Length: 105
Image (cartoon, rainbow, N blue to C red):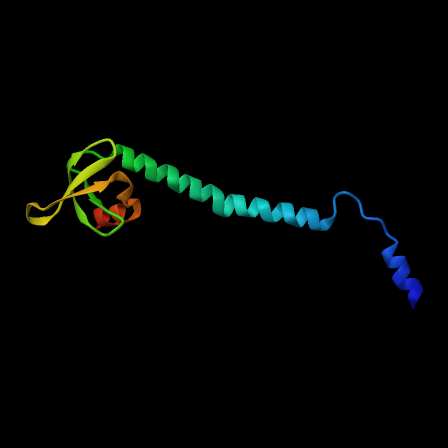
């Protein structure tokens, strides 16, 4: 019985162990399914924010709906119902909510 255990332990392992290949596979899966799509989403969000102009209908992250009345380099003024105006940072624009709101129109 002890000879079988000793024989099993005596086998040397090479550099490319199966555990190393599994670990590399997990890293590749994380990159293609989590990191890369997140980078693409951030790039699309930045492009959308850079392309907005006066008169565009947007939705903020906080849920405020309205039209762009004025726009500066870092801020914009959102015109809501009945002439109300609110100043926001450009980073407050929600890409997904704006697309969904524009699709309903």
